[in-house]
Length: 234
Image 1 (cartoon, helix red, strand yellow):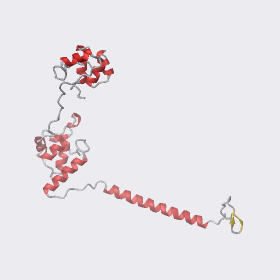
Image 2 (cartoon, rainbow, N blue to C red):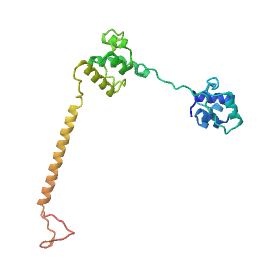
Image 3 (cartoon, rainbow, N blue to C red):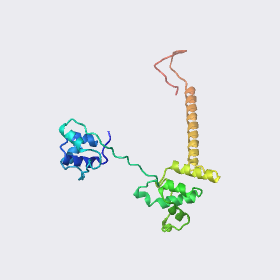
Image 4 (cartoon, rainbow, N blue to C red):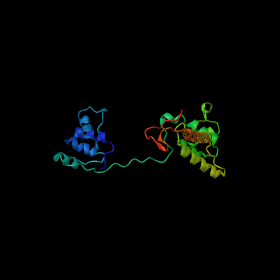
């Protein structure tokens, strides 16, 4: 069932301006009955300003009257609010990270000059004017901009950055760079595992040889061993 655009504000208005039950209001607004109770008792965490669902086109006077006459009646939405759609535009970046954008842009320009301004704009969520100013070193704060990996800064993901670099390299007719940062670590791990496997093999061979060299003196009569003894010769 569709819900009002502002459920809590709508519930506050219905509490103040109708005799609908808390159950009816809660069901219509998609809230828990205790939330409606808190709004009615003015104990909600935030003081709410009521929103008129009639003026918003979500309810009619007739629908409210039906509900007031019959406590079991379920209110029906007259016109559901339109879904809010995000318009096309630059990637959204939290306010706390926006100051890091120039550093991320400068890192891409310095390490991957083949990436176009349009691709950087989509990756970082900035304007081409800003990118051009950093590329041309005419940015007003250029003296304080230092290249920093945008992935580390949280401005984009490693997968998106790699895809953009690969696409730009292909368009420029150059070979896309491969990430060799962990090659030495991978080789060291393989070498360590190989040595460990060889050490385990030597230890197993030594244990078998030691067991074979021990002469057991647990025979009751020649050729018959005492099952309760297994004493090696000193």
